[in-house]
Each structure stands twice: as structure tokens, then as C-alpha cells.
Image 1 (cartoon, one colour):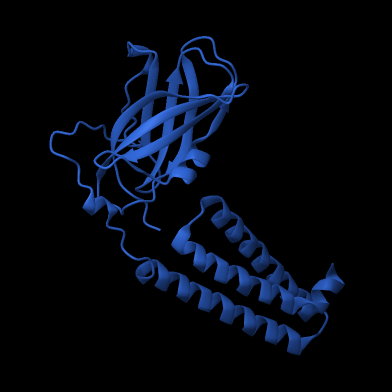
Image 2 (tube, helix red, strand yellow):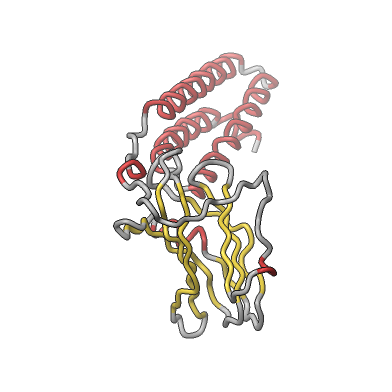
Amino acid sequence: MKQFILKYWWALIVALLTFAVIFDVLIFTSYDILFTIVFGIMLLLCICIVISWVLLIKSKKWCKSILSFISSVIVIVAFTFISAFLSLYGPVPDDFGKNHSIPEGQENSIPYDMESRQIESADSLNTDSYLQIQNDSQGGRYLYDFYYGALPAGDIYLKCYEVTENLPLSEERILEASKVSIERSTSFTQLVSKQRFTIYEGEWGDYYAARIEVWHRDADTQQEQKLCEKVYRVEGWER
């Protein structure tokens, strides 16, 4: 490993530059899992580059160590500057929320705040289903809890629609992010706890009404059924 780093130290910098470019591109799209993976790889590369500096200096390869240091600093500074610039000026404003204001008289629930912990107990509801949406770390990012009665084993997942035009919201992303596999249940119980999903349409503070539906897919028959729905006031996550 030491010999490899001493011989191919430049490859670490090239790899860092490559993943920095990918990271900047992802600022526009923000596929959560891929975004996290790329960031993790970049962090690992930075650690390896620091190790390469130490190995080059200990091996008295002064020119290579100086060149490695200067090249790394240039890449990191350029990446930081470009990322900050894209965050401030890059993404095109998303007017989805502005163009889909909540209709007058439309009943909607507001996601509860994680810090307030104000939430109705599921045990107090006279129903066989229960859905609660909670704000996550930023606007447009949410968590959901779901309680239900007897169900066969399968998947629980969400589908979201803007209410005035019945437009699907982040259809594939929400389906995958919200999906939870469950075992067979025989009584009213909590099936989903604090599962994350993100609504991408719109921007922070531009609230609109979304119908959030909870669906179940049977593991054996693959038959789908809608279990419940509830209208919430939501906002989009700013990418």
C-alpha cells in the first residue's frame, strides 16, 4: 500500500477532482444516497492524500510532496468556491409552490415540528389507521409514522399528489425512499416509524397542499391497495 501511494499519489488528486465535479453536479439533482456516497468517497480521498503527504515527506521526495500539496490545495479551494457559488446562484428557482397555492377552504394538516413533540396519541384515535407527518432537518424533508390494523406481509410506501391538479410529486423518489417492508400483522400496530422522504417540487416557504397516500403491496400476490390518505401543507426542498 505504501509503495502504491508513493508511486501513484497523483491518482488520488485526480480522483478527488473527479468526485468533486460529480459532487457539484449533484447539487442540482441531489439524489440523496448517491450524494452521500460521493461525499464519503471524497472524504476518504482527502484522508488518503494527507497520508500520501506524510509518506512522501518521510521518503524525502520533496518535489513530489510539494507538488502534491499545492495540487491538493488548488483542487480543494476550487471545489469549495464552485460549490458555494452553485449553492447561491446555480439552481433555477422552482415556482411550483407559487403556482399551486392552497385553495381557499381546503382543509389541510401541518406537519408537526420535531422539537415541539406535539402529537396526538395513536391510541386515542377511533380508527383503524393513523398517519403522522413530521418536519425533518430542512423544509421539504419529512418523516412519517404509520399505524394500521391486520395486514399481510409486504411493503408500505407513500404516493403524493398536489391537490388542485392531482400532479404526482417526486413519484419514483418518494416511492423508494418511503418504502418499508413489514411482516404480517394481526392487530392495530405501528408499522412505520420515522421513515424519511423528500418532496422536491417547490422551494422553502412556498406552501401548497399535497395529498399523501399510504399504500400496501402484498409480498405474495403483489396486489396493491391504498390504506389511507391525508392532505398536508408542504413545501419543496431547495436543492
